[in-house]
Structure formats: structure tokens, C-alpha cells
Image (cartoon, rainbow, N blue to C red):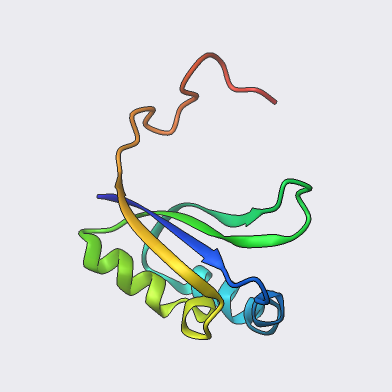
Length: 102
């Protein structure tokens, strides 16, 4: 089952992100969870981090929440909010409308 996890960073969270970045990356690399997509959200200028998004393939919502709870960013208070939503990939990983763009 796919779940989208959207986390919104605290306004003063960059120091937390910086302090725990290496542990966060190590957690993602070692995780047995099938991470389909992951990355930071950014401001309109594309410079400041504003949160994180993950799409994970897990058995149920509890597993998605457990994955997020184990992330050092979450555990160390980077996020002010988090939503976990079931996600349907109607494109099955292929371009949704027309050919892929380079």
C-alpha cells in the first residue's frame, strides 16, 4: 500500500535539519521500507527547506507512521506537522500525460 507522508518544517528548523542530516540519510539508506519517492519541500525560490515528502510502500498506515517516527528529523523535532495519506499511483511510475521529459 502506498502512503504519502508530508511533513512541514518548523520555521526555525534549519539548525535541527543541519544537525541531524547525516543520521537522517543513514536512516533512509538502512530502512527496510520501500521508499518510492523522497525529498525536501522548498520555498518558491527553491532555496530554503520547508519540509519533507515521502511516498512509501508499506503494509498499512501504522507502518508508514512507524517509518516516519523513526526518522531522526521527526524524532528530533524538526517538523511542526505531519500528514499521512493513502496514495494511489494511477500512473504506475510512468509519465501521466505524454512522454517523459529530459
